[in-house]
Image 1: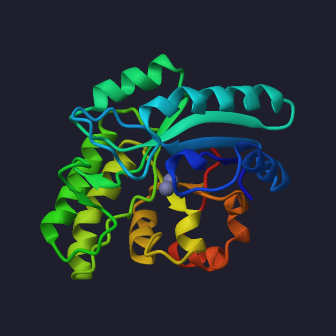
Image 2: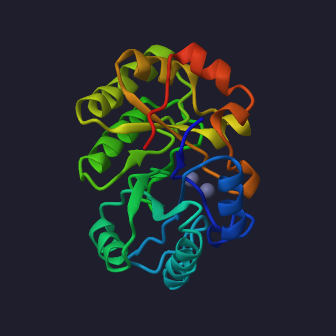
Length: 250
Ligand SMILES: [Zn+2]
Ligand SMILES: [Zn+2]
């Protein structure tokens, strides 16, 4: 059992369901002490680009206001934290930080869904056999973490590389080495396991664990019922045994 979950979404992203209150009630029922919201951040795209996976900038204040009020209401029962899941897009990262700081956002987790930019880059979760894509993902993720602005790295193995496993591990080893050296926490993504995505993958986490990396559990809930303890996710016990991963409590 873990005490905290920092990875949960709200309906504003357009692909999640349930009310914020339902997520919080579920977190209490499941024994969490901390219920962190990290909806897909609005990104201050320069050219009017509209993303399909996140709230618009005009919804940002409502997000913070709703969560502030629930944070106060629930403070005796659970600690509600107000964060965001963000990509590092160099063209608008400074502007994003201005927007988050001005609203008192408490933490960011890194979920690098597109590389290197959303308008022009590739979706990291699309199947690829390209070693160049893999290299770009690893280098861009390291560059993102180098900003020092992220609490942890969400679904570190989001890149869906299906080429040679030795090539995969050779490049992902650099990401693990960086994480180890800089004390970057790597997330084991509960949703990925729950709905049978390609991540969290055994080869990656075996490697990361053998290199001495540290791990945190994240529900990545897009539905209140996805707020659950690791042991309530089918296959998690076996995953942890096989990879040698154990969770730290944030
Ligand atoms: Zn999402
Ligand atoms: Zn997420």
